[in-house]
Length: 243
Image (cartoon, rainbow, N blue to C red):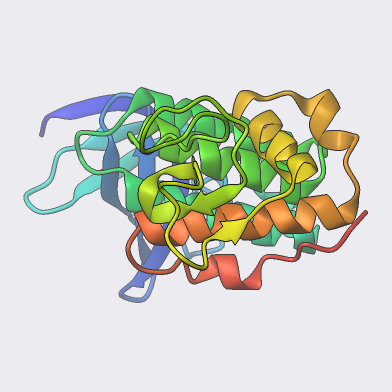
């Protein structure tokens, strides 16, 4: 039976039979992979907790007829225990892996893999506020997928900014002449935060107060929901509370 190795982050799992589990992973080189982990639910399983959501592992797969089989898993990033113990980090991570699941397929994207692993690592290390980490991840993941938002020049005409009208279906901020009636208006501090989250300017992002962060999260959520066409279930449960 042919085999292959790859790194992968666990996105979700489903029970199969009495002891097995179907694991959906985003891998570094093979895109999204659905594979069977045999006996993983037994207390004596050699996989232990290595194939839980948010874990990153070096994996060996055997190629199967319909689903591949995980034959070996060595932990690279044990992020799950720390993330699960912090409710805010957990809800942020759940939204991240659901987004990655929706944005990737079997062809995959190394950029999406590295972006997700980096975001989960940051959550586990408490490097930034979980809400900021999530919003930054969402903006960057959509950018990698080809939906980079504009927070400066008009997304329709290219007219230099700043602009205040924010229209997710048009690609970000737009000039007054391109804005439809009733378009959401975003204040300058919120636009500055959105730009910082997209570019990774953490010093600027962390200098903001909760009101600005809440408005930015609303804009990010609207942008994500529009471009993914149907809502992210986990995004509704994200705990956005301040530190």
